[in-house]
Amino acid sequence: MYFAALLARTEDGWEASDTELDDVETLSDLTDLARDASADEDTVLVYIEQEDAWFGVVRVDGEDDPRIFVSDAIAAARSSYGEILLTDELLGREPGADDTIAALEELVGLDDTEDGEPDTTPDNDNDHDTDTDTDELGADDDDELDADAVPAGPLGDTAVLADLGLPEAELLLLRSDALAEIAEALGAAEVLEAVR
Image (tube, rainbow, N blue to C red; front, side, top):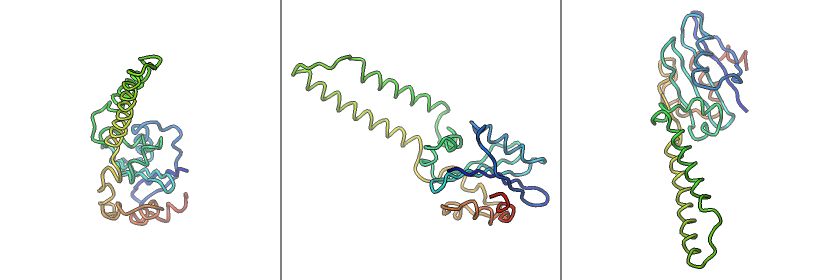
């Protein structure tokens, strides 16, 4: 189950609203959603949470690039909303790396089937076993690629909320009910409670 909320800073303090992400497909969509919530280009925080798995915070300050923090990158990578936050830049890889990995996986799939029916001659059985071992190693290599692509644990800008009252060390310790603790640190607990 997902929960998403917007916290927008105004002259009168923080305003909170829950939000639907049905029409959000990219980080750009999410950033536009945040900017639409702020009339004066003030700070807007987008909070996304998958219950007991991970949470993410996207901070948008006017026209600046969004700042992103994800509590558990591997868990987020298994989520459609998490994938929105796990950009190539955040993962420290070249743009289009996903396309390269997909192309490599497709080639591995072709190698598995291009020889057609397996040979049943004794000499080729040994070769076939060797090919199978190679294929299994190839699968492990793919796992290593995936592991390299998405590191374990927290990822992103750990100082994303530091100037708003939540130091990096405290952000890294948050697990369940992180939004309540974030809102408490920002002084937005009451307005958030009104929309939950």
